[in-house]
Image (cartoon, rainbow, N blue to C red; front, top):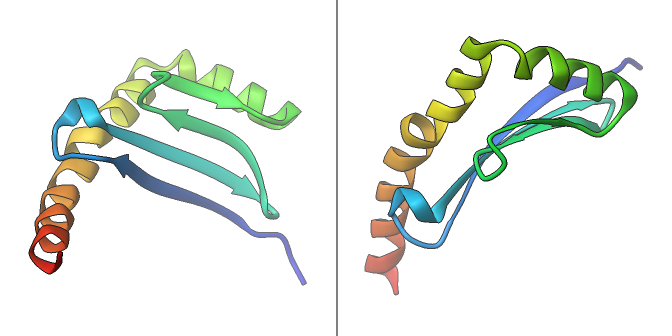
Length: 91
């Protein structure tokens, strides 16, 4: 009987090349996505009044933007290398 605040990291890819990988970080409150970072866009975008304010704050913080921009290589690349090879050996 409460509200739930959570974030989801995901990687969308069609090869193991970094240029073919998109890193997406979505923030939710009570099942509603209020802000998202996409490596394709390069900044956070807000989807609600609160999300727009948060995105403005984060986009004006160089360390926050650098953190998100680096996640494509740090978070996605190693995982995709493993998953991609596993998928190829199964097909």
